[in-house]
Amino acid sequence: MPDAPNSLSASDPDGTAVPVVRKRPKPGERRIQILQALAEMLEQPDADRITTAALAARLGVSEAALYRHFASKAQMFEGLIEFIEHSVFTLVNQVADRALAGTDGAAAPAPVVPRHAGTMIAMVLQFAEKNPGMTRVMVGDALVFENARLQQRMNQFFDKLEATLRQSLRSVVEGSGSDTPSVDAQVMASALTAFLVGRLHRFARSGFKRLPSEHLDASLALIL
Image 1 (cartoon, rainbow, N blue to C red):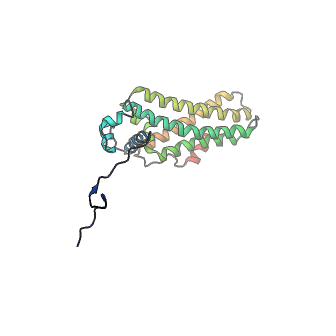
Image 2 (cartoon, rainbow, N blue to C red):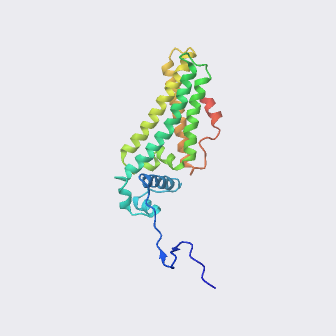
Image 3 (cartoon, rainbow, N blue to C red):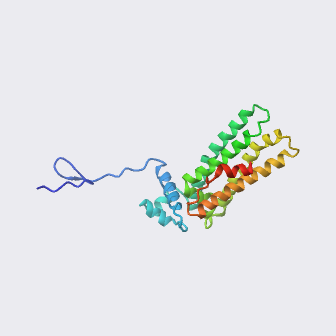
């Protein structure tokens, strides 16, 4: 009885083994693979500081191969932060634009803009749930031993989000007849941002077991 053929190799008609040719990644593909692997490693609740050696081992490449695509590990984290910024603000800006378009230049009905602000918060929390590794970057856990500019950039991310919330809330505060619409909108935006950051920290601290969207509607109702 002939031996069963090896499923991992091929032969030409005369029986000579044909070496398996590994396809080279397309331009930019390896860079994405590196970022995906880094994010996956960050999803481990007990993950310590991630080294380039560990990252290279996970990908089955040399450390030199990593540095052909990123000048430093800090640049890899910047790639993750860019993904967070693009993903979150693309959605948040769409919600903000819809809120403004719905007012047609007039003050929005009281429930409208707070609902949009709540939707923005929900979107960020849902993004975190789907991307636990990114959550550790957002709250700074993964950046403790990295370049200080990375944490500064995440701080700017939350400052920008708070500013977007403040702008969205200002119109409804003005419509409510408040004598201090700017102050009131700032207080609400600050409270929402603090709530958001707190939920993200709890999610990371619990080993990704306490979902940030837990009792979300009831919690937002207490703020808005």
